Image 1 (spheres, rainbow, N blue to C red):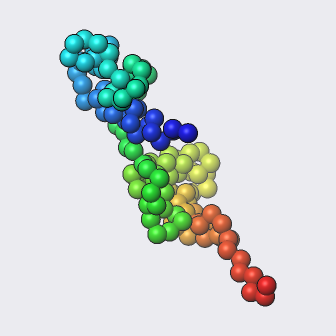
Image 2: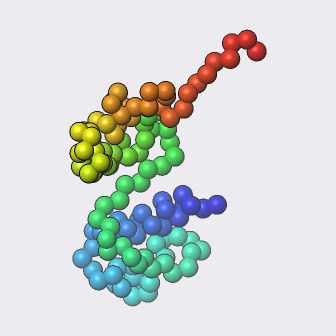
Length: 129
């Protein structure tokens, strides 16, 4: 329904332009003739990005498989999960229990569910069907 196309072909290019431009935001997406640009999309109406001031970096994660285990996820690959685990480990409840960041990792025994071992599901074989 167009979500990926919107992000990949409209938002990401304009965010990258915004992040790497010293021009004021109202001039950023204008063509050479001073007209507002549509980001190069044929048949698209004029596009103007707003609300990007708090964004300092973009990472586009597509829908391709990213690893060989069910524990693989985009947050692990871009390093965001390290910061999330550290944040949880600094919480009052974690400090009271002497939890480390490893207690919030599904790749560590300390953080894994004892049933699924951090996979997120259990596979139960039904041998006699």
